[in-house]
Length: 271
Picture 1 (cartoon, rainbow, N blue to C red):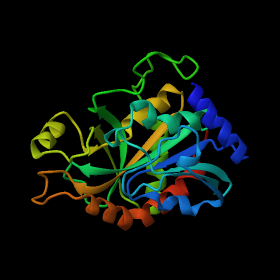
Picture 2: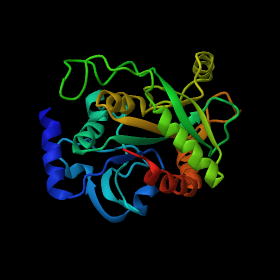
Picture 3: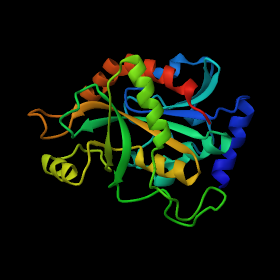
Picture 4: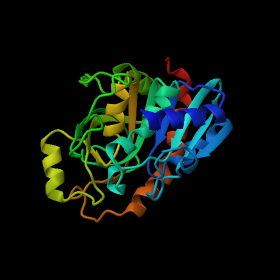
């Protein structure tokens, strides 16, 4: 892909290290990028063809740095289909970073809790997803240099990485649930009827991201781990309305726990 190649060429001139692990930060969860030492911050707007975040709570920059002895790339903010971007634009960053050398992607997101056992501010590992966004980033001619025409998705979220994440969370005393994430288009929050439907088909969490990026990562042969921050209970679970302010407030509330977890987890990931 010409656009991916041009973005890659730009990054190669800006950054010397070739991180093997990347973290994608969701709504209100961008503080982790500040934990890297020797960091190089690159605004998305400076990278050729890289789509710019417009959603509140997404900084919109790529950060390269070190966590201990581990080189890490951090996408501080992502773009979404609901912003008017295409599937190709939504997964552009994943494709560029994979070409840059990243083999493991750790996705984070803000999600609505469908499973009543989750509480606001809880962290939940995504074990699988249900893509209800009405499209797929692999639609169209396949670029065989990226991956196969029909990639397997039976283990979209690495079982080995999930096992490691549970071990780290247990050592830190951080409760870590696990569940199925339903990806919807947005930007409106779901209706109570939609949440009842999602619960009936096996979803524990609902959000507006992550599934396209995970599909792209698997297509590229990279491993994916995803962690949801339950920023609110989904419509109809509790007798109250949902606001984006609540999402950002919960992200702020949980950021210390998420940072502590990621700082312990990332150096132990083998690539």
